[in-house]
Image 1 (spheres, rainbow, N blue to C red):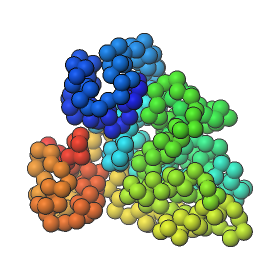
Image 2 (image 1 turned 90 degrees about the vertical axis):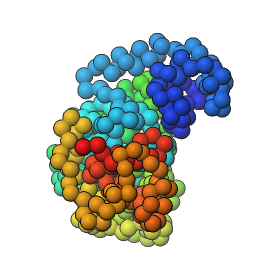
Image 3 (image 1 turned 45 degrees about the vertical axis):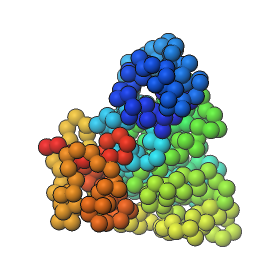
Image 4 (image 1 turned 180 degrees about the horizontal axis):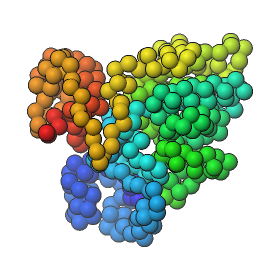
Length: 355
């Protein structure tokens, strides 16, 4: 993760070729160069800055700090499904909360008083119903969503656009401490990384990727919250939007999403009803240390499992075997993975869980 030029795609490619991160540092330069890595990456692998790594490991030794890699059993199932899934997650708080069913709540940084109240109320109701509220720790709707979840004694996750040891904005420092007590602070960025503009669009894909759906409370026509909502749609997540007055500029972004197919909601119950089988499949939260008994899949899913073996296979081979569309196969794999019957492997492969 410290190597320049190594993002999620190259990280995963290196794992596929060399099998383990340690093998990358003993590989021949010619073998690394064959993967079209940048010169800066090749130079780093020849002479890594282990001092930086030692500082990262020192952060990991502090109370309630955790590092979850892409292949770890505790890595969130939904997040693993997305393109550019982060190879590593730095977590301060309870890592088990990442595998619970989540709803992202996002919106304007300068919402109306009604928008603030709506974000708090929806978060409190949904968290009280057992959902984890995920947002980005920004001022405005994000902060109100976290606050509403905490007020109902629910759990909440803040995905950060900084390293896990940096709180941004500083005005939300006390809120961040409270979130870590009842949920988790999460970042894909290494310790020490400060807030930069390019970090926040990357953060948004994680907010939507962790969640079953995204609720946009208030947003202008050019709000960054619309990026999160559109990423959610691309990831196959549900998108919800709260309508407002046609005279309110903070409602224009939500109205645009509704025109594009987002679901108009008026109550938190609308969201719980709409999430349907995905919410059922994702609950209860799974702990990597003590997994719950696997729910029995229904007849259609049992038949689908017959096409899966215990050796990992790609989706296109599954499509060929079962005769369903790629979209239907992807949806069924997601449900079965959430239930614990299917395991994802590097390279977009799937297999039945060994029992």
